[in-house]
Image (cartoon, rainbow, N blue to C red):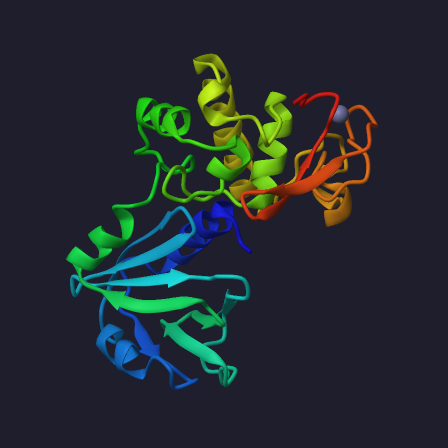
Length: 258
Ligand SMILES: [Zn+2]
């Protein structure tokens, strides 16, 4: 599933449509009414919040997209080319077309419904308006293992399984450690790592947590230190695999002692 960096990068890329009048359609036919309401509006702002993409329109409404497991936006610089039949929402200007396929959510929301969508979400490490103290409070007061807490979008928004594994490894904390036992300096370190790791992933378009001159060309299987690794790439210890928060967790038993 795309993690927060994918959504924030999309918001940045789709900002090329900002200030432009959008033509909207639903070639698949499953969002015909919504597309009709979007058609002719101007994009005022594209933003990410956690794993949610919001396109705010001059009409006052906002397009809300959650990509889920399969969703993708496909960009084309030839708006005259016919779209794929499975495109749920197609947004075009004179020079570019953005085609949304297989989202788990695509809907048009008025401002109260946008507010209701965002209200339960925790702070997002990638947002510039995030409040550090709020974030530390949210993490430190959560109950349960920190590995489960990090995946709970109401505690902190935008983290998926890869960032969870790699950020906890970077700060030397085991996924099963109870969140409430973490010190303030550990929580600060975790938050800082999340911000740095996720920001870098926005820039690079993928999650790469190993260093080295060839890092940008590494295959996915070699780009992480513990996530889906047999051995920790730092110390060589066999990676421990278990279930935390309903997802498979990976950690190094040496650097992240229980
Ligand atoms: Zn290790």
